Image (cartoon, rainbow, N blue to C red; front, side, top):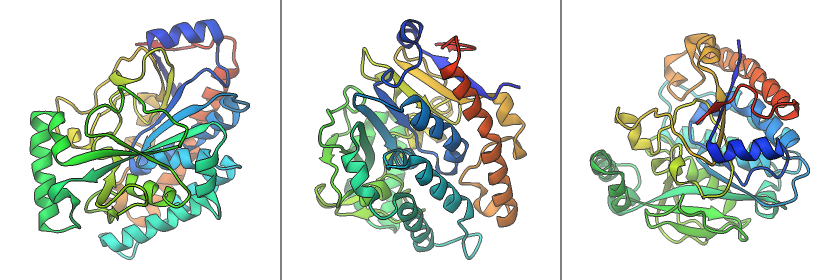
Length: 353
């Protein structure tokens, strides 16, 4: 059984045919939202940062929402493998007092996870990395969505969901995209056009809060308020607007690598509830997507990768054992990718988009 699926767009195919895999091949790296789903990608990420990108000589734009931005923060550390190891172990061992933990309890655990990931001086390393240019995507609430959890926020989220069902563009009335990015990063257009997109310089004093805001799911985590350099307001999960990102809007004449937990994507968080927008396979000329095959996913316990619904549905000891098994199995993805980038055929087994 093959574990890794390689999906490549037309212009990326040409680049791989001419150049093969090398440290400076890709222009951008994408990290999607997905909560515990990231666990299936951790071993693969280690190969990307330690093998494929080792010795890179030019800047790399790394865009991430929610846990996607957290993964990139681990990559930016002086020893990314150690950062991944401690974050993974903490994530696997997280526990709660009940099957229905409160928002403050979940937030406290998330704060602990982020501090574990970053270590003592991790914020500085994210800001000062010599070539990894972080773009941490958040959604700043407008109107009722700028409120703390309560009836007004419930109403605001409801209006946002209804508007989004008509047109994704209506989300700009409810949320503004705010991207916290390395000072030397250029705005990424057309990927981040619309939604009143604002860029804020990453600095040591706002990295932690930007990363926390990027994963702040309303009614799961507490929002992050009044972030340094970004002004007043409630900052929420970047996945609200950019859940898996609009891959049809990638910058032209570039190659983007997307390690993802599925061959299918959903652009925005509210789109998950719309059958005509959710779980769509996309074609983008600039894209190299690496993801688990359907066969690999089917043979995992419960026939799926870890996800946020496991909390409360699966007893804690069973959940942790299941998650650890998935992480162990995911080494197959890492091994196959290592063989691919070091093998004679850079497009071995590729599905051409």
